[in-house]
Image 1 (cartoon, rainbow, N blue to C red):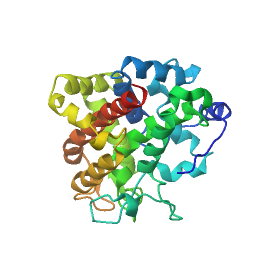
Image 2 (cartoon, rainbow, N blue to C red; image 1 turned 60 degrees about the vertical axis):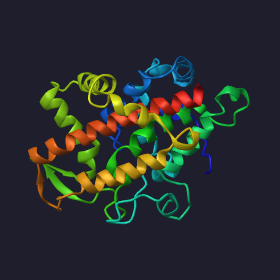
Image 3 (spheres, rainbow, N blue to C red; image 1 turned 45 degrees about the vertical axis):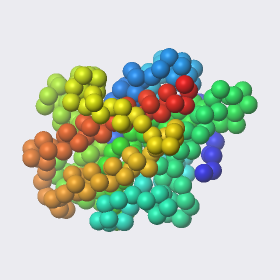
Length: 287
């Protein structure tokens, strides 16, 4: 996959002026990165600290949505946020699905994760690296969140739910935005007094001591000693998109309590998996 370079510092000042409009949403990505940073090995934690821009103050979550903001200026990066597949097949295939509108293979979120993983593997020889490894870290962290949002591996015809117009309680939204933002915001408002840190802490408790604790090792593992295994994550995502995101949804309908309560556990699971797997990938890269 072609490596695109640009001046990170010049773009940062523009990013601070713009809202983040894609991906899980700013809070969803922050949650993934908070979970990940809390699970880093000493070696990975040090590498992340060295690579983060100074203004982040060693807080990966504070820059986890950076990739969304800069896509206004880096048009080439747009296709790297998703990997849509043909309608109703409910499976993901790299050769079929990982390409941009021009048919260039590897230009999807799965290919991007592999690409930026490979770039970060040059960290120990960074004095000779041809890559901007700060950029690589920020992209990898963001795309690991994206691939765990089911509608980032949704159907091609509706652009991952972006063209399905519904109401979220009384507010008009598209289905993609509901999965990016609305379910998380509603959960925080309803159960956590609009406090993202409390929402995140609950996920972390379930990861370390609760209902997911026995599954975490499986989440972290990649077959064949791979450093990252985004094909697996995308395959999970499209199945969940079919079984939960798209299921029983028609254009123009109102989604409220029933949809929220039945889909929230899926969102919580995918946020947790995204954080655990980002940490595991960074630990393998820098370990």
